[in-house]
Image 1 (tube, rainbow, N blue to C red):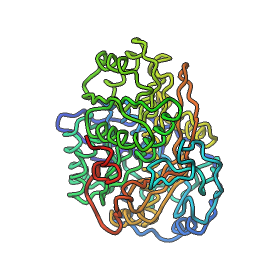
Image 2 (cartoon, rainbow, N blue to C red; image 1 turned 90 degrees about the horizontal axis):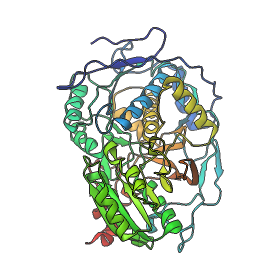
Image 3 (tube, helix red, strand yellow; image 1 turned 90 degrees about the vertical axis):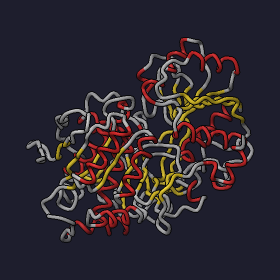
Image 4 (cartoon, rainbow, N blue to C red; image 1 turned 180 degrees about the vertical axis):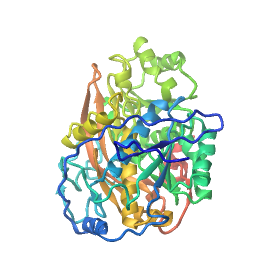
Length: 515
């Protein structure tokens, strides 16, 4: 199949692979060329090393004129389309920028290293009621304080790469629709690997989709990015995760909710691995934080009526709800609970940041809702305003710029930066570059790929939704490491693994998870 190019633009447009029972060829939306603010060069020796490669002959695998084949599997139809479309758009925007000659600032440095933008952070916004702000995240399992070196953000996060595309090669986006179907994911992944010879694959919203894919990626030694917040624990040589983790989301939001609203928690969770394991994190950490889970329910993804759940919640009267429901069906809980008179505060690691329920449903259905997020459109910083402007110039009808769209955008730029650092698209070399401590200045804040775990450090904010569905940020943590699997001994640079750890395998958690 030939590559299509819009002559007015420098992005290589999507190519659709026909699925077994899938849709026909998809055409990318018309892309408007944008003028970018020229960024000043970032100082720092490590970053200079990366930038210096632009002036020497490129060393690439394959013919110099070939494109980089970028496989993308995100749901554009089915139960998870509301999330997948946003991730598809985030990937397209990043590819447009890369093919136009722009890159995210960043390189081989980050918080705690000697480099640019470093400063000492302010006082932590939240203190543990008993342990105080200086207690250890490793020993106590709580969110770290801001008493550390973090990055002072520049308004502009893009700079010229010195290269249209990567190493003289444009990125060719191959993006079939897996239709929220695990079998389609598997079939299309094999086609991307075996027929299209993809250089990289980014795929999946739901954890069930990821777990359907990982064995295929491992078998074929395929470089795989999972760009979604999730329940944590994946330790896989070929998998790199750019979404937020329980230690970056669940622990901070639990701390806040317990301090603000009380110790009695009721959990509503989706009945698959994401919901089950996220609920296990909540059960494990509740006693550590002086709280208790007084009830939990696991809701099948097909369920859209919640009258029985609402009745049980009204009967037990928890202080607050922990929400791990997901998908378009589950989102119906919020207007139904509002109609039934439920006014209980809610905490989450996903809702409103992923599915923008605060815009989809009339106020006050999401009133008193709180979420810890690595990105939300409402972040009130100059660099995020520029990001929103660029996104909406390319996708003017986007209903909301969500957390996972940002993760997909960052992952695409991070991959391109790793290819430049490796000076090849050969997968082992790119993986080695990703394991070098590489980081980028994302629109939400600085992120860094942790070599040992293949997960990002994250800039986390806690958002609160009021009676009118306005968003305010009541706390922030500029740098939370992916520490949990490291505590379990995971070091993928030293010892490759191909599994997912669960809270039951952590001796510290296990004693709190006994039935």
